[in-house]
Length: 234
Image 1 (tube, rainbow, N blue to C red):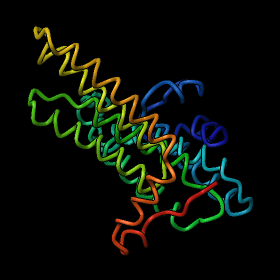
Image 2 (tube, rainbow, N blue to C red):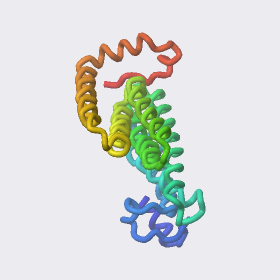
Image 3 (cartoon, one colour):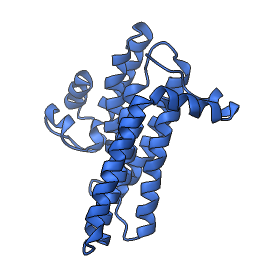
């Protein structure tokens, strides 16, 4: 990326104007960073072909996450894009990254090349989804259901990143209920505290009986779903 930045700086080839100093690469959303991100992804891919080292996927996944933000001004052809447009692009790009991570997870049984792509894919998708504003209680409830789905998906895919983001989303929805819907209810704080204790209890029980729980899930999963389940990694 430094080489590409110097080349673009010397030739004045910027897709969307001079972005300024190189240090701004990690600070500002700008379409002009696009070719630097492409160069990083290509460099990481070449390195991965030579060295089968999982951490080499980190700069690749990070650049894809940056690209999910920097693509917005390029796609809409303007600098003054709305925050809503940025969130939609982030969600779509995040889903694509998760699909790539899942493919890597299935194809590589010995080395974990999917971890960083899962992480930054979830940052892009979950972050864009969480920042979307809606006055509809139904849409907020659907958001909670999506996060519950992430928790379930974490068991199927054997990826803790889904349960982390899913739990944050569920807690965010519960916080919305506490501060907006039931803020004048005397009983709700008590119910919320009991629910928190119950969630902690479930977490402890799951941690102690994880192997038994997952084996029970595997026994009840249809064979075609087991076929598409990523392998367990140590």
